[in-house]
Image 1 (cartoon, helix red, strand yellow):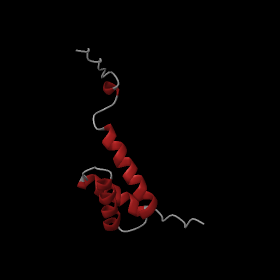
Image 2 (cartoon, rainbow, N blue to C red):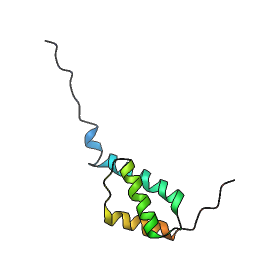
Image 3 (tube, helix red, strand yellow):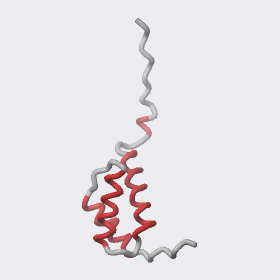
Length: 81
């Protein structure tokens, strides 16, 4: 039998639990912020939920509502040329 390769978990201790999920949430919210700013909270909320599900995150309803409230208050982006 061959010896088992050593496993090091030293890098895992430097990151908090859930850091990958938070990156996915940030990515999804930033995408919605670019496309739905200035629209109604209901539309923004649905877009956030759809984006979160597309990256494998179960939406947290309270957090989605907070993000949607802020994004809906932002001015719309001018059309790109």
